Length: 413
Length: 73
Image (tube, rainbow over all chains, first blue to last red; front, side, top):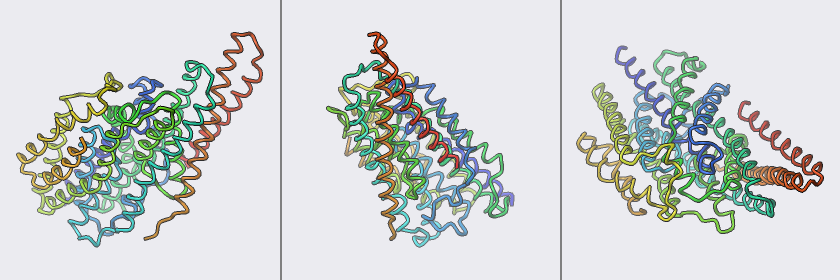
């Protein structure tokens, strides 16, 4: 019993940490274009997004009943599996943040769950066709849908706005963009904070603290909302820079079209029964807005790196999740070691990020002469150390995952 | 494998139509405001531009309100 309570506590803390990384990873979705077009000052933008995420967490009445939406068999899922999955998701979120690549936090969580479940109960615990319909297809469809809508909207707004003074209209566009960004933030708070609540509730139920089918206690809702809001407020500036400036150059009308398209796609998809990933929709709409303007360009080298990260999210988080599961199966020392590796890995990534800090002061500075500069140097900075550092920590499992992730990124650089 | 193409298609259709319509209406409002400013500086009539712009923004506000309702519900 004593041991179980410890594990339960660890899972709850890890879930909140995942919620936190989810927050700062996804700030870009709502606020990247708002910051890059100057509609809001960087700090104001993230503060607004944080507040709306917090409000969103309390708004939702329906709590996520499954954490994977049927991708894995959740009957009799053990607390260790949830913990291992969270470890995989957190490490992948942090690595993609270090590289400044927008990738889906939900896909990272799914990947971690798949890896941990396969390691724990074999391939039969994974529902292959649900992976295709809930992860792969939405990942392909979201950027296309949002991109095409944003491209048409951009074209239309430039045509209608012909012959007007650009300065006079910019103010209006920026105001509209803030409204769209607010909607995206609110929707994010309801969806993603809810996921964490679902995880914690499930862990409490499996731990026998709550009876099955009960609603999350108030402290779960509050802590999940606060964790995601705090993460959002800290701001994943690296990802904001890639999305707002790295993919394309956005003028206020484009930023407005992109953000409106993203908000519409997110709301339409979650209410018409075909869920699309927020991150992919937002990245797609930014590229669509870039292509929709006459003479607009999309920096395909950055986009390719982002696509590679999308493709790698599931397998990479899965490998780390599987490795973490292998360790936790060894008993208490394995769980403690996994926790230590998670803390060590996160610390390493944070230290690496200090070499070239990106914050609210330089988030909009990107040399347009060398569009790939930031990411390339970030990759150059990261490629050797993690492998070395993690080998030193004798993390054979996370090691293979890093090796798995690194080469394709290096190849595209 | 059961892919719900109808749902995907409707998401695509609705997203495209709503985005383009919203951006279009909002742009008309913004352009209306800009015209109004220009008319004020020329001392011309501003009634039409003002009414049009207000109408456009009211439509946009209604759609945003509907969006919030979708999130809350």
